[in-house]
Image 1 (cartoon, one colour):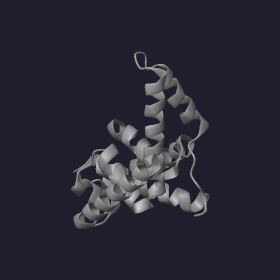
Image 2 (cartoon, rainbow, N blue to C red; image 1 turned 60 degrees about the vertical axis):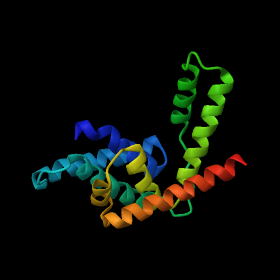
Image 3 (cartoon, rainbow, N blue to C red; image 1 turned 90 degrees about the horizontal axis):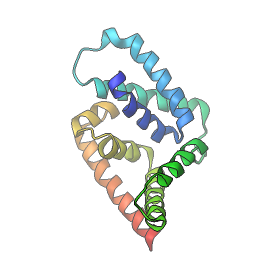
Length: 165
């Protein structure tokens, strides 16, 4: 589990919307994985763990949030982002601001797409999983993964393009 803990936290954070809730989800998922380790038949350990994280996140969301809640980044992550920009060194303040605005647009666009599309694009583009592993994690056929990914990319492009106009 340890080599894939960062990926597990990244997925949980994107599904829950903030780092504090993601910590709770990952902790629960690690306990579940520890209890189920004897049932692991080998194969892709990363996909196995991310599947558990995904199920834990959705269970946590059903228990703790209504469907009408709008997800907002927590203050700790915003402070870390500001510190990272301050440490950029050679970049001008204008370039740092543009990069921050672009990242915010992309994050807002990802947050705005429906959950099945969001998780597919996150697993592919951020976590770098292949289609087979994404199909295993999300428990859908590979064809569904490909169509969700194509639709998610179209929605992201449209959202980012409309935000820049």
